[in-house]
Image (cartoon, rainbow, N blue to C red; front, side, top):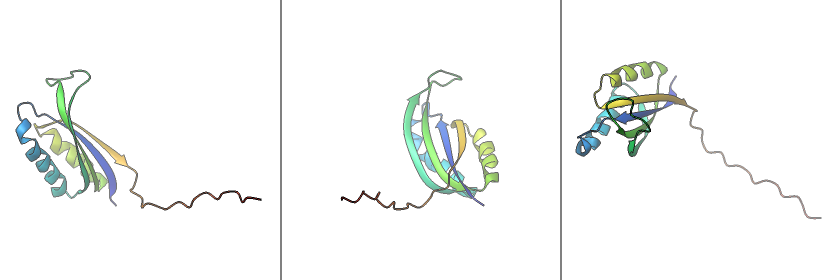
Length: 112
């Protein structure tokens, strides 16, 4: 059974701003290679950190929404932990995407 997930990755682009598209494409192919079905990739731009917890003071944020088996998350965490271009990662399970249901308009009280 597949679940819907969101992965927020903070990329270390220090000195590599011109190769950013290749890095995002490579990460997207890593998801697909492991069996995830990408629904959306949202490039959120470079942002300053509120505090410096490591050697970087800013990072490029990329949000992936995908469908995958629950066991795949541990594999992706381990793989991205070894990737020098992935500075931080956060995975979150999302609610299943429901089909849009048309709501009927509220009935207006009949005029008397």
